[in-house]
Picture 1 (tube, rainbow, N blue to C red):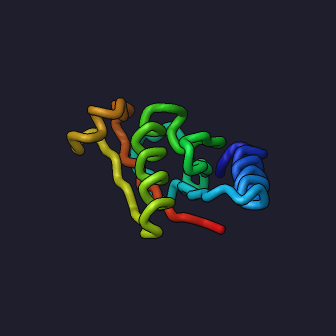
Picture 2 (cartoon, rainbow, N blue to C red):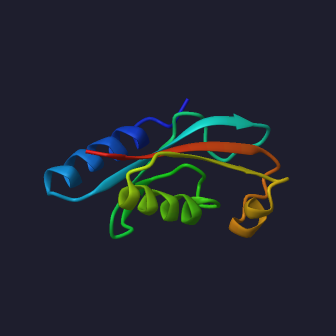
Length: 109
């Protein structure tokens, strides 16, 4: 279960940014295995300029997820990202916790 308030903050932020006419994407942890920094349901909202709120990893994969969220804002395509210690990209972005994290990213609004 996600920490109280983090998801609400991300959703409230998304709503506010959309209300301001901003383009927004939402990233949600949909699956974890083993040791993972954030639980299923954790969310991160990203604005087209890269501003963000929330967390899907406590920081270790946020940069990669923000990049993919900005791409989703641009092309309108949802994507599922997976990071694990067996994934070369996971080491590049710093996911060394020994688990697997799957994140669904889509444009909203």
